[in-house]
Length: 195
Ligand code: SF4
Ligand code: SF4
Ligand code: SF4
Image (cartoon, helix red, strand yellow):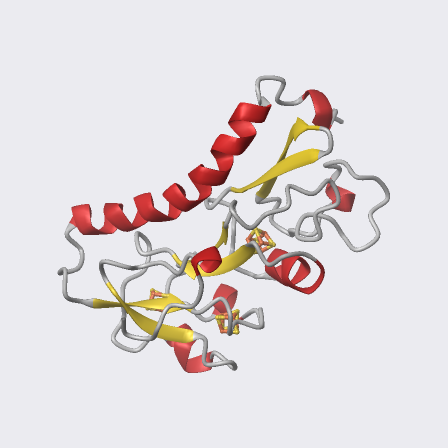
């Protein structure tokens, strides 16, 4: 079993602070990718999740028309506490604060935990593994600061006329957003529906 504290010796305090900015950029870059791909016209509205309304019911994993859901967990680094005991990563009462599979909340092993410096750790989502189940989001929302949340990844979404997940969402969390603002960046506050 690897020692978390030696897994990424190159990560420094400067890199850690850089990661805060990277989180916001990560969301923005994905949005630019959609526009560049020309899959949507600039005026089109897109489906997106209001993370302030989502109750992590699990439908985002199962109800998408795509076999691999277009909904993934994202990490808002500007909100994260970089906690050693991350309640999105660990079971409520982990045996040890390390990356043993028995300690991890994510059933897909999609969260990568990296040591930064005492007492900080950085958490990344591997979207190829993430199923959009929302389990980590619930842990972070209920016991942490809510920096993990679900978003429709616009480079995956087919932008169905009627989103199959929206039709089943119990908290009315799906909304239409303008294509030039395709993501909700939670630390910037609530985005109004349709603009
Ligand atoms: S269906 Fe709605 S409440 Fe359920 S996980 Fe998706 S956005 Fe959240
Ligand atoms: S717990 Fe679920 S939503 Fe969170 S990273 Fe793992 S697969 Fe994705
Ligand atoms: S619009 Fe279609 S592809 Fe996109 S999240 Fe909803 S069901 Fe999935």
